[in-house]
Length: 396
Image (cartoon, rainbow, N blue to C red; front, side, top):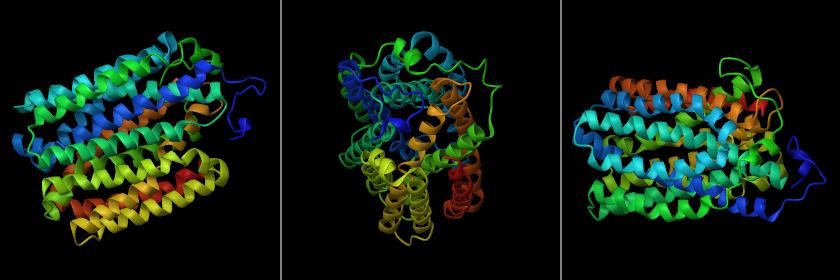
């Protein structure tokens, strides 16, 4: 991989042993994040049923973690600037699995709402800090690692989905399932935290002056990256939040089978991300994202037209294959972009925009699903995704 491809690198610098260790530690928080979220996703159908929620009510509740995540992101850039990304990564690697345990005790709607708020806030802090740390590692190593970090997220998501399906099949209680997931991640988080880059690495790797706040410094390119990321993340969120419900309630799949939609999506996404850094170097960003967009649109089309759970699961898998590199490349483009922002500043701006869009996404998806059905809602999402990728990916 050519070192000239990353802005701000110094050709004479060689990555030291500390940076090499950080290269292998950096994907671990992505793995934890994917595993936690997929474990949460596979419990959404049972939470909906246990709490007696309609599609519209569930959509409203799913706004809460996005809202708290947006608020938390306003502090993430400042915290990274003051404490370094690694400090925040270490704290959130432990905090997110602990917040997952809250869903084990959700017996009423108020508790569900509180847990969602806490869960979303920790996720907002973690999302910015782990991507900022990945950018710092890329600059220290003078090579791309963002796709492989996001591959770890997808591996965690696939693993969590598979374990969730197994938990449903074994008829484990929600409390038992989530407790086992949280407990298994604590040693991993503690071990990885020892090898992250020190706080000074964020400042050493990124010498760009920092913007004064989230209201200022928006450029057309940064705005377009944020809008593209918003639609891509909303689509991925729909697979996690609504894919199981679509398979279970619209196509008649069992709860265990319904978990396979997100499993297929995550597994294929992970497979492409593992080789995504190399593909980006060989094919170039424009060709890779163009081909990926075509595959993603084809996959979502297959989901909308699916006559059976098996066909829909295949469509979700194809969608994951196509969407795999779009988020890492979009975030990498923001984090490495020239201008007045540090990596954390730029990522916080893009994250604020994507999360704000996702704030409205669950409400809109829930309202559309309640009014028109999930099939028609997914068809509308297909049109939105196609149009956004056609325009947005030209600026990468």
